[in-house]
Amino acid sequence: MEDLKELMLKIAKNAKLASQKLVNISTDIKNQVLRRVAQKIREKKEELKKINEKDVNQAIAQGKSKAFIDRLTLNDKVIEGMAKGLEDVAMLPDPVGEIVKMWRRPNGLLVGRIRIPLGVIAMIYES
Image (cartoon, rainbow, N blue to C red; front, side, top):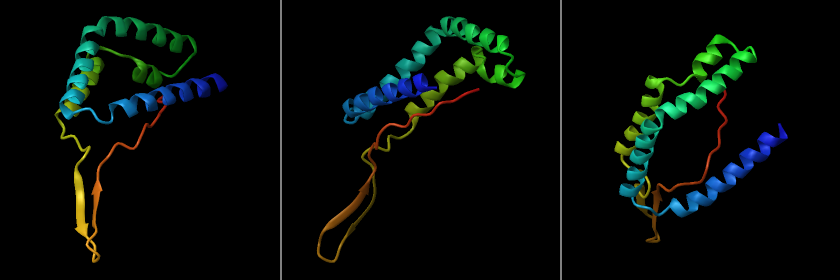
């Protein structure tokens, strides 16, 4: 368990460093990256399924439940859903820099709420 904790901390730190470099890139570039990742997922579909097959076989050998195996299994439909999800995100409006609310205080000071990236969130998903 400690190895997993150390691995997640390392990944999170690397993601944080990367996020600091990406914070000022344009919406167009962000969307290009999302579409390119979707394209790569499709290009590597067979490789992803082959690697996933090893994970599925290991889970079966460990006696995992059928529901677990079903959630773990990558097939063409699931992989296409992953790629399509990235393309869907690329079509959404970019909230970064959006002024949500702006008002002037009695002393003349202009105050506002602007959407900014806050950082990195890590999540471990287990089937």
